[in-house]
Image (cartoon, rainbow, N blue to C red; front, side):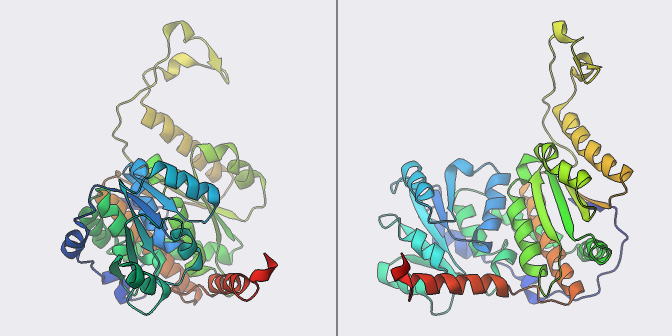
Length: 377
């Protein structure tokens, strides 16, 4: 379950587009993927084709069973080939357009691996490659990559490595019901931007949510930052980010608001154990005996509350997203909620939430460099 705090509750003013009611046929997907279930997976893609899967694999501890190849960097390619053999792995190439040059270049580095290609059902390079090579193909719905966390682009690799995508899908259905909460938070952030708060600091206090950073940044930047509008988002893991970005947050220009993301109840029973002969050792004047038998979850909560209360003392606007746990259903709910937050944030600024013209221009220049100007290399 998700709870959004420090907002003025407002009723959502816009109807949701049909993409937010899309339901992937999970039984069909399981049937198609049955020969590959249990293998390790190498996911080749960029941007929205990988950020939702990244969220899921890190939430559920599947990093050792998957590798995301987001670059043609030789070091990344060599490391992946070394750690994921053709015998135990399958490559999943994901590109909604099917024409992402970077993904095609990276994909060419795994010629001997079994490959599944996920792309939109149009004529494109990945489709033609699949026909030539005899690869399995799976259709990608007409949904922008950053909003595709409930589609084949995220669910194909997740299903292969044993993530419960059915529970994620159920959670996303719940998340899309949180229209008023998402609109209220979007309106709060919009109003702050109008007051000069052009940056948003997002400390995240749960390692299970580490994968959400890139998805959240992508959703807000690509959906909202157009026509000279939108906030710069820097998301980072707390409490580590307190040791560097807090200096910017509290000591830099006063144009930053904060959105804290934390887990309400961590299930771990682990606690701090201080040797009795170290009880009187002091850290910043406090004897270590006060930490003895303190649950680790309470120590983490104190780090979160320390930064939050400091922000309140400084008069810095803050919001909170609290999630109840890291179950599949709750993670799905959070992803869907962030979709709504990005959609309403774009809507409030009068920009199209589903395009990314500045990103496309850079891609076109890259194609030009690799094509007609290849002699420069």
